Amino acid sequence: MADAGGGQHARGRSAYRGGPAKLGDAAAKPRLIETVYGLGYRLAQAAGCRPVETGGGGRLGSDTMVDNMRTETVLDRDLFDRLPAGSTLVLRDVPWDDYEALLDAVGEAAGLRISYDRGTLQIMTLSPEHEKYVRLIDNLVSMLSVKRRIEVLSFGSFTMKRKIKLRGAEPDGCFYVQSANIIGGKSHIDLATDPPPDVVVEIDVHHESVSKLPIYAGLGVREVWRYDGQTLTISRLEGERYSDAKESLALPMLTAAVLTQFLSLGRDKTQYEVLLAFEKWLDEHR
Image (cartoon, rainbow, N blue to C red):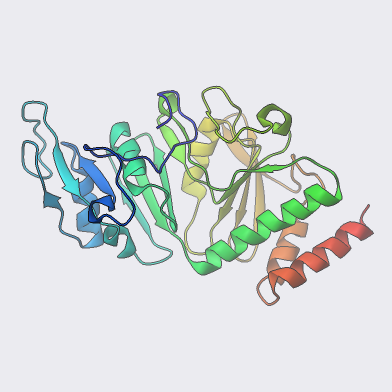
């Protein structure tokens, strides 16, 4: 787990008492330490699962702490598998410690995006269509980086968080461009000491990401790209709010219109065909 300042969360670490779980072990299924606020219980209810009380003090979901003990609730991966693809679950009044415990419990689970904004926890499940556009944007930026000899570092959907801000999020993608020389060869990002990504990507084909903009603003992300399946919108941070812009600040060659054009090609053509078309466009716009 990152320090209290925040940063890239090591989601693969065990969050339950008794040490790390072993692959293949029945006990290796993710566990969430149930606190008096009842996060695990509320998640289980929302997913239609029944939490199992395995120890501690007090009843599940209790608002009363008993001798400062905790109730441990085992939450199988099945809990999240029951959430439909492209769905969003929102829970309010969730303490920061519960948010971090959930990150640890879920580990490196594919198909989820978890965000936190001053007590509001949001869990989103992904769809194949969603992931298709995530990969396409990453490939387009990678090709631009190589063809134009611009250093761009892609950090995917790493967990960006800062306890001091009480905010955290997992974008669909992110890039370091202006700050690439500061990050260098780092594999671990700590937002308490490292700059946030210069660009964050959100794919909104099945859910909205507007609610995550205050999180990114609070973390200091200067630019957000949002694609809703029809149009890509570029938003730049001005003060504490985002304003729409025609072109990228980090990669000025990429305008909202150009990105929309090539993402739209991806609806009917393969990624290979889209990348060939983009390569041709780059050669024509030197």
